[in-house]
Structure formats: structure tokens, C-alpha cells
Length: 518
Image (cartoon, rainbow, N blue to C red; front, side, top):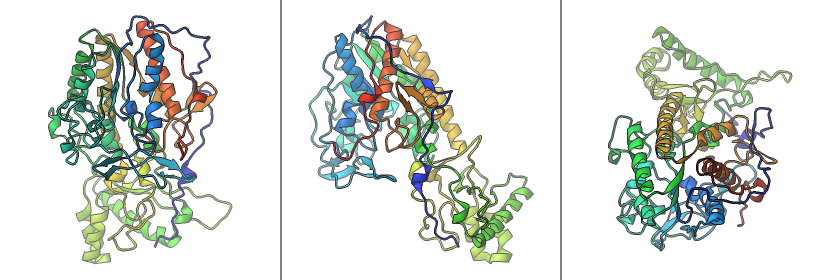
């Protein structure tokens, strides 16, 4: 029914151009003489998640760790009295983790000219059973949510397989019973950075919303790994973190949470990537007949239509037909499987009609404007493939077989994520103000990156996947160059709050991609 569908991923990489609306963050100020101001940087500790750790291109590895914004801050703090900044370095530049010799995390990605792929031939050498001796100043732990920073036993290897602890923290926790915050406080920090909360919504979003929105549930011990953290839980945790970190007079800088739909993991794959040339006229006619029948059912029930009219190539070289939208499952829709089955039974027979009803009962075409859907970056390799166990002609993913819930962040799920993010950010800003902490509006920065871009000296940085220079090959984490930019914004916030002065980083001193050989 559907033939020769090829997902040309490289075609979705758009080179962004400068616009009059872009923000210019050029660092052309005269030579700066560093000053500490009213802050004491002698013992700096960074708390956070993968962004703080230096995770990039789908893995944690030495080069990424040394280019993390936290390490770059520490290097500048050293010019005004800052001390040693110890990092729990990985064993190599491959990335990935072993547990007693068994791989549990994959190696970093490289770009092969058309798409990201795991580093060829690379095998992880970092084993979490080889516990490092600390203490460590970079306490960024990939995968950590806000409440994980308070969780005793989060570095206990016995809980890794059950998802109760974190393999990255296992490597450098001072004991199996400690918490990230406890290990940070044990160092008596005089200055701290705190960028946490991304994973409280991100894991829900990157899983396509298969988790649960736990708003109203105040017990994080009952949460699943892909759930949205209750905003009151987040606020209480954040208060506790900042109360403890500032109790002995330490100063610090905090950052808020970007909207997930500003990063290329959600914006690279369009909602309408299917060329008209990929769908034969006979196939589009059959699908339009089926989708039209279901639209008639929704009309009769007083519901909006769920399907668009598919377009095939008309054979006229002088005309260009529009691309077709992806077929997706939307769990929030009323289930029409029964109505579809009864309507189509006279035409298809009871068995086939029931099968069609089960497939399309909550299906619709993706929406790409307004209150829109977002197709996950990892879904690109699925589109146009044959769904195992489903008979033709209903088995072409995204065309005749709907992409399942874990492949798409629907408009309603986006709204849930945004509501939680707004609540978290409100708490972060108010708590920062009440405790006299420097504040970085990362959400505004990421929003600007995703729209008109940012001028960083002579470099135009955008959120365009691969080509934009801001995000690595996993579509979520920052490049070394973007980490330098973020470090500059952290320093600007510190300068504004504490009267400090620092030299700023230049983009040309940092790569926007890591080569296969490091």
C-alpha cells in the first residue's frame, strides 16, 4: 500500500540565518581586572544534574566534564581567590558506564554526515564499582531530579538496578547512605551554584508523556522515573536546598528551567515530514476513505475532525504538493474504537473492523501550529518503517499506523509540562530573591536561542539541531561553546548581585562539536 518511504533526516537540518531580532551578546568590553566583590569563592561547590556535570552528545566523558559551565566558572573564580575544583572524572572520552564489567550506559554520539551514531568501536571503561575518593566540587549528577539531591542512599550501588539510586553518584558518593546535598555541605562551601529541576519535567517529556503528572501528590517516594514532580514538592525541596546551602553565610547563584520545546530534541522533526511523492495515489485514496469515515463519526458525535486529507503527487512537474502530517495516538481523545467497529463492520467484516477500531480509536493527525504537538528526535528513525505484528496496509508507522504515545509529546502533554515549569520557575525566582542569591534566567536564553538566535561575538548561535552550535547530538545537552556562553551569563548575574568582576569567555576558544578522536 505504501511504498518506498525514505526518512531523509539530513533534510530536516536547517541552517539558521541571522535576523534583525537576534540578541547580541558580544563580549567586546575592555580588559577586565577580576574582583571577588562581596562573595567568597574559596570553596565553590556546584549542584545540579547532567547540565552541571558536563554531559553532552548522549554521554558523560572527560572533555565534556572539563568544558562544563561549572568548571568554566571555577576557572574564573580561581582568579579571585577560588580554590581547587575537583571533578569526578570519567575514565575516558568514550563515555558510558559499566557495572562489574556489564555495560549499563552507552558511549557518546558522533555525527556521521547524515545522523548521530554511537562512537564506532568504543567500549566504556568507567565501572561504577570503582568508587572514587572525594570530596568533589562538581556535584552535578546526570538524571537527578530536585528531590534526589536530598535522598539518602542515592549513591548506593544496591539500588541501581531498581532505579532507586544513580550510577553516576555511586561513583563518587562518600558513602552508600549519604545524599548529594550532604556531601556538598560537608565541604563547607563559601559559594555555590544550583541549577536543578530540568529532569522534574524533562524525563516526562522525552518519554513522550508516558509518565504521570504527579501534581497533587506530595510523596515523591511514590513517583515513577518519568513523572512530573508536584510543584509544591519542588518548592519545598528548593527551599530546603537553599536554606542548607546558605545557613553558614555562603552566597550563590541559581538558574531557572527552560521550556522543553525550546530544545532540538522536540523541534527538529516536523509534524508533517511525509512528502506527497512518498504516498501513491491509490494508497492516499484508501486512507482518505477510511479517515473520512471516522471524521463522519466525530461529526455525528459533535467532536472535531481528527484527520486531514492526504495528498499524493499529481504527476505535474510544475506543481508542488504539500507534505502530509504524521498519524499519532492521542491518549486524551475519547475512544472511538467501538463506534468505528460498528460503522465499518458492514464494509470490512467484524474481525477487520474491530482491528481497525483498535488502531484508530484514539488516533489523529499531528498539529504543527498553535497548540501543537512535538515529535521526538528519537522518532525520526521509526517514521515510515513497518510495524511488527500489524498486517498491511495498516502497518506503516506514522502514515497508516499511528505513532504511539512514547513517540510524540502531544499538545495537552506540552501544556502539562509548561504549567509545571512555570510553577518551578516562580519558586526559583522568589526563593532566590528572598535569600539574596544571584539569578540566571536560562529560560529566556533558551527561548531566544529557539527563535531568532543569539549573537555570541562573531558566532551566530541557534537551537537548530547539529548546525546551530548550541546543542549537542542528543538534542538536549549543551555544546562546549554553549557552556562557555552560559558560564558568562552566570558570571554576569554574580557580578550584578555581588559586585564581582570576571573575564568572559570567547566562543572561538571552544568547539561546538567533539570529533571522533579526542
